[in-house]
Image 1 (tube, one colour):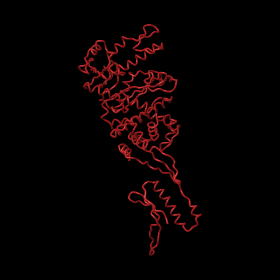
Image 2 (image 1 turned 45 degrees about the horizontal axis):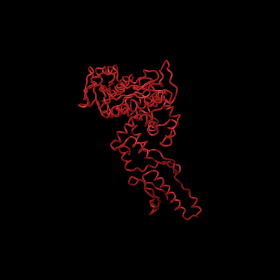
Image 3 (image 1 turned 90 degrees about the horizontal axis):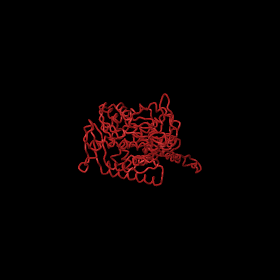
Image 4 (image 1 turned 180 degrees about the horizontal axis):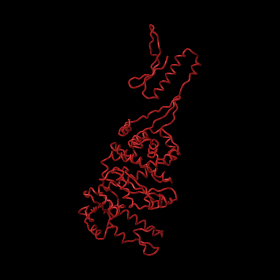
Length: 497
């Protein structure tokens, strides 16, 4: 008598059979059908059941004490891992066609799922993903990653440019700051300027060293190119460096640059024009000459909300919005109320545009400045050299929220900062991992949009899809998750069977 496993209608059937001799010929005779299964673990359990039945049949005439000594195997649960997130996010990562980057894939996936320290990352990877790596391995890999980052980023950009060509006509550029949890700034050397320096912080952490990150994205918010600068760098000085790098790495020339008013300077606009690039840039209306300011304030926005004026060969689009005016007014009223409270308590007050310090150490509200500010409520300007209609100019400028949203994703979902690394190589490697994670989140956003899901909802659903690992005898098996229809739809749009 023996156990037979055979294929049957796409599954595996397990049976007890024996050989019998009829007329001098040997035939196979069914003793008992044990069961049919399609999964490895289920088949293994059927085999274990078959072994027990076989032992009972072969020893049915023996005493009860012998039957009690028959060895049996048991299933031991080893733990769960996030099969859905690992496979789905891994599939998106595989689109980049990177080679020998198994650990990088794991680090990027873990950054999306658990944006924590590298030490904690190592623990969570071993606990929740079907692999393991030590903190030491992560740091050693990051040191190597910094040296190969351009090759990795170039393949990522190649995929973005080729896969989303309709999003490449406009390049959105902006700057943010990333602070470090340390009191020590980097020291300048003869070979290289220090990277971590104190400066104007967009996170309001002027007390900590930081770096400046200039980022260019397409209209889907996917990172195309970025540069790291010393923490004290003025954001306007990064524009042309960032655009030149973007043009170099994406291989496209016919693009329109969109940037906010922080990038506006005569030298930047002239540099863009020298490269024959089109641009849409936020205007600093209060920095224009007085005659142009008077011309803008004389416009009747009750008749028309949008006007076009000339700035030499450039176009100035001026728009009024009641919603914008109400927000500006409320923000100013809050600011003034806070200043009044500080003054009444004789509390030290920083220099402020609504304060008058003409009398030493006795600041008071500058009513003239407040009155002048009210004239500009709701008015916003845009400078461009394109032939687009005013409405299209404003629409493309508002696409800047994509790069701002990418910064928010980086800072909050991926937690690119605060940063705890101090070696330049590891800082650069950390940014690479976060930029790849950001790209995958943007890809995921596009894939799940037809389902009406947000990025966060999709990630939560993927983390619900867990597999269980068990040990049966000397072998280890994986029990797949029981997936409901909503999860099946999600996996389907992500191309996961």
